[in-house]
Image (cartoon, rainbow, N blue to C red):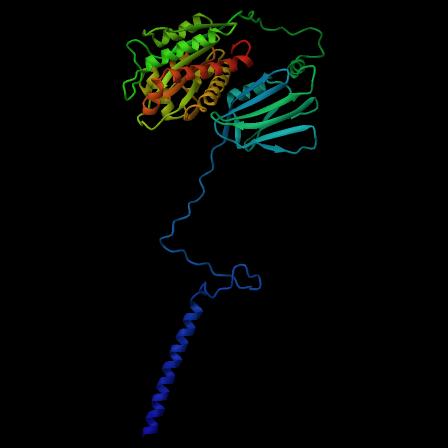
Length: 433
C-alpha cells in the first residue's frame, strides 16, 4: 500500500513538472529575445536580426520634419560696374544656398538657386534686356533660377551670400583694358549698324550732390520717451546737426535739413522739401522704442511692404497713423514712377549705411544688429530720391537711453552715418539718381 502511494505521488509530480515545463517553453517561444541575450548589433557572424527594443512610454516623441518651405523669390536684380569688376546682386526674400555646376564648356560658370522663382520686377529686367549680356538669367521648372556667364574675357569671379537682407552677390573681374564696364556697354550696342540708336535725353549732371537730413519729430511732437523721460526729438536733432557738419566738409556736397531747431514739421512737408530741392539722397534719423525694455540695437529701413508685425508697428508709430492705415502694399511700389531705380538705390544705401554703423560702433559699444528692413514710412514713400530711415537705438532700453544722453555716443552715431553715406556716394558718383 505504501508503494502504491509513492507511485501515485511520483506520477502526480511528473504531471505537474511536465505542465510547468510546457508552459515555460511556450512562454520562451512567445516572448522576443531579451537585449541581454541578443547578438551584438555589429556582430556580422550572426544572421538573426535583432528585435528592436520597445521605447519607454515616457520617452520624448520624435518630431516629424517640418513641411517644406515655399519657393524663395528673387525680388530684384541689380548690376553695378567699375573698371575692375561688375557686380550682379540678386535680392532674395529668404536665405538660399547657391549651387555651382560643372558644364561641358570649361569656360562657362553656372550657378543655380533651387526652389527659387523670379518676381515680376526681376522677370521684367531679364526680359527687357536691361541687364548686361554678360549674364544669362533663366528660370526653369522646379522652380530653379540659374545664372550663367563665360570666363573668356574675365580674370576670375567670386560668389557669396549675405543676410539682412538676403542676397546672392556675384563679382566678375576684368582682365585688363578696355574696362569691363566699357566692354559690357559695347556688347549691348549693335555692331552691325553704323547709326547709333536714339538715346534718351539725360539732364546734365549737377555740380553738387544734395543730401537732405531729416531729424525725426520736433516741437509738439516729442516722439518716443525713455524711462528717464529722454525725448526722441532732442536726440535726432543733435545727431542730425553733427552729421550735417561732417558732410558739409566734403567737397561737392550740399547738405540741407528739414529742421535745424526744435520745431514741428509735417511729414508731408519733409518729403516736399527734399523733392523741391531736387535732393540726391534723403536720410531720416529716428530713435526706436519697444514694449520690452530688454530690446536694444539699431536697424535701417527703406520703403517697402512691412515683412513682419514689428516693422509695421514702427512705421505706424513714426507715421502717426493706426496700423490698419499704414500697410501700403507692394502694388503701390510697382506703380510708382522710377520706383525700381529708387528701391534699388535705397536698398544699397540702407545696407551700406547699416554696415558702416555696425563696423564703427561695435568696437566701442555692445551693439545689436537688427539688419535692413522694409516698411511703409510716409517720408520714404513720397520722396523721389533714394531714401532711408535709421533707427539708431532703442530709447526704451535703459542702457541705450543712458548712451543717448552722452554727447560722445551721439557723435559716434553721426560719424557712423557719415561713413555709410560717403561709402555709398563713392560707388554711386551721381547719388542714386
